[in-house]
Image (cartoon, rainbow, N blue to C red; front, top):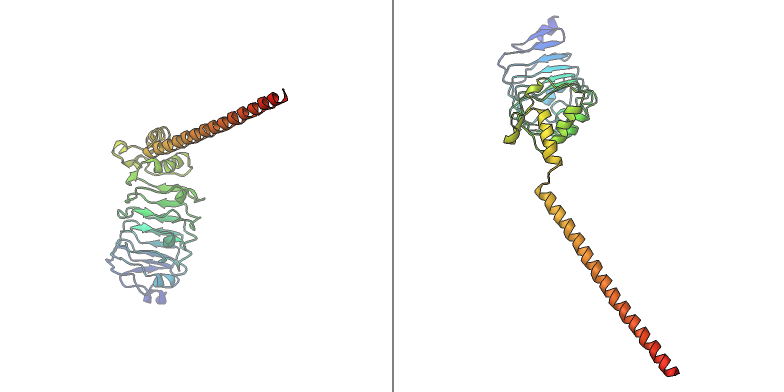
Length: 274
């Protein structure tokens, strides 16, 4: 016990396999964290950077709470050494994007909270491709306007998905995602606040109502590019018909000429015989 107390980071409290540094106004990732730590709580500090090397020393870490900090830099490959991590809370930070490399090494991840990151505007299509054990994902109250359906549809164990109070752009590209929401067995907490932000005509509309309108506007009405395509198809059909008629006319003329010549030759032969 004495060794554990000695190695406890300054301004943090340490219990068996747990280090708690909540609300200590830390500016940097704490040093002297016991290597056998399984639960690390850094909530409500001013940490802006998570060092991948220092984290990799905590190979047995399963729970990491970093909510309410200043994390906003690129987190790619940050968690490469904590493959046993099951719970990760990065909510209330300044995250900007999530790429495949951000969480790809967290093969055991079950709970991921990245809500309340107002600057989070992009989650790559394959961002969670390696997180097949993920059951609880929260991306509520961010700057997201779009989320590719395959990003969450391909998570076989997903049971809870937080999407509320985002800036969803409910256009035809988003219809597939809304349809998946309506048909999925996944639970969406605070579903009443999962609404469209743009376009203005759909603002504050809940997803079931938005799906109905988008089905009508996207699947029954033609857009400018559709009219262009139809015009091209029509022109090609017209051109093909014109060419076919022209060729048929030429063939008819050749046939008539050939037939007339044959008749003249037959008449000449009959005259000669007479």
